[in-house]
Length: 158
Figure 1 (spheres, rainbow, N blue to C red):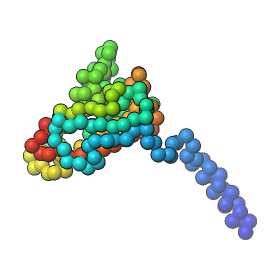
Figure 2: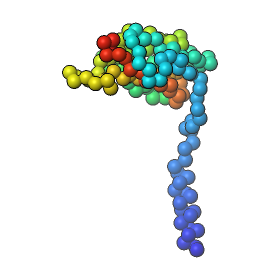
Figure 3: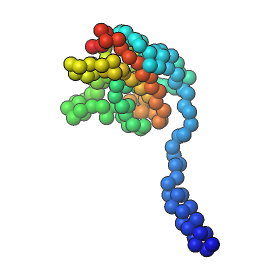
Figure 4: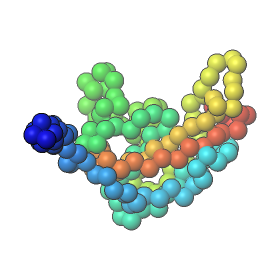
């Protein structure tokens, strides 16, 4: 019985070191993606539209790439050459890498990256857009990310 009590106390001490404090395990509904519908089949150009309860000041939309981590700047997308250039990354640089910065609640996509080789499948036309909140310095606000998946009809992908 005594061994069981000691083991229980030891287990409690070990598990207390694995605390999950500081993480936000709650549903964040500051942004709702309105279009396209999740897993919709679309054509280009495409508008991604969302509603927001004043969540900004800015939104960064990452298409077919992971967003920057919470607290990280959009400079994390930049390569070494850009990081040595004043004013880089700018909006044009980010767009070339399928990252869109806006203060609106929509973006228009004229192109998406082609996927796959010569033996293309319908899976090659699947894409994902992830919206995160960023501040005026381009630093990600919070942990929330809002994602929509869509398929671009083959003849329209670029």
